[in-house]
Length: 64
Ligand SMILES: [Cu+2]
Image 1 (cartoon, rainbow, N blue to C red):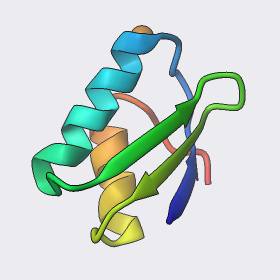
Image 2: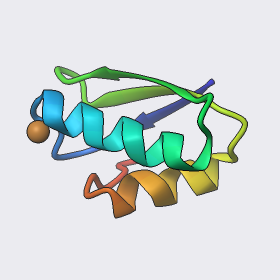
Image 3: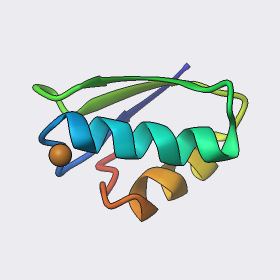
């Protein structure tokens, strides 16, 4: 499990976009988003650094 804090997530569209971006690289990944805390919980075989790159490139800078 990877926990990332991001910025700029505001709605269901953002959640879909980031989930899709991650699942393009790991189809089995699961992503849970808490919009209130801007926190992503990602279950994936991908390395943390790779996940950070994917999420950032999807338009949501990672804060940690
Ligand atoms: Cu949105």
